[in-house]
Length: 385
Image 1 (cartoon, rainbow, N blue to C red):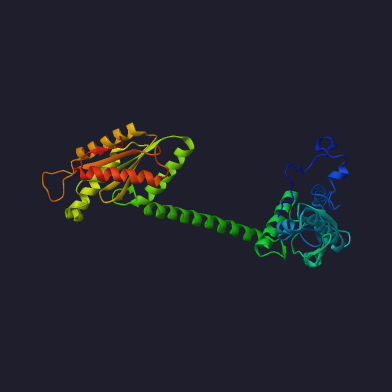
Image 2 (tube, rainbow, N blue to C red):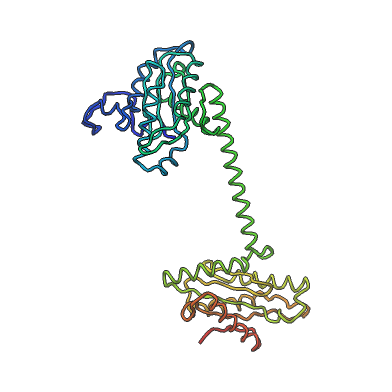
């Protein structure tokens, strides 16, 4: 549905063809496709009538007519046939309106009729006849097309500005469309009340949608976070690793991966108890606090961590691995069930991309490096030489 007021239209002042680009004033006031009056002509005629009638008794009526779902017809018929439908609507509109009425094409698929002074009941009856007439098949070149229309009825006399009349017509049409179209709706105070309620309902719906989006974000974050430590988990690491590798392929910027393993946690049952779980969480926090702000640490499992190092080649990765190992040592987390002993970590570092075709190749090599280092006694850093 298109608005009656065109962009840039003015409500007063003479029209100068030299500034509009039109040859004559007559061309401005006539729709070039249907030969009906244009929206400028409708505005002119409304301005002439608007002060002449009081808000009671017989008075002119503005009938706004909108073809339901014309965009689909336009797409299916093609431009030429669709234009023929619009011409046919204009012709049927002009011949169906009460005697003395004027017909206009006020937008792409929107028409209007300005009916002489009648009662509100008569205006609604005229709108009903118009809806029925336009529902009969219309010629479209080599075929006929059936359409439905919605009609909004606005009685003159209560408004003193054309824009206010157009606003009333638009709101009434919006309600007709919201109720399913193919109907006649008449403007009254209930339309304003309905419009206000509708806006409130839409605002409430928007708030509810935003609340749901927030809840979804919270849930998505919860699925990718280890709650005790606040570190992202293996799901987040996999997604971020793919993203980092994609950026490396596009930009050529290197990145590196660290794998961190708490020494002894794979074979010692002491890590299964509360003291062991607490110790592993403390190590995870030590790793988190050691990495740079631009990097990110992940908890893949108890005592098993990874770090993505942005813009880092092998040299930077090795230095980062040493910082992680020293950071854990400085935290001096007690080994569960072994007073006086502290936990240590083994760290494997690898620059991604220089000999890897896929992210899986990177992870496979860093896992192999880590496994070899753990077998060799742990508490060290390793990298490809």
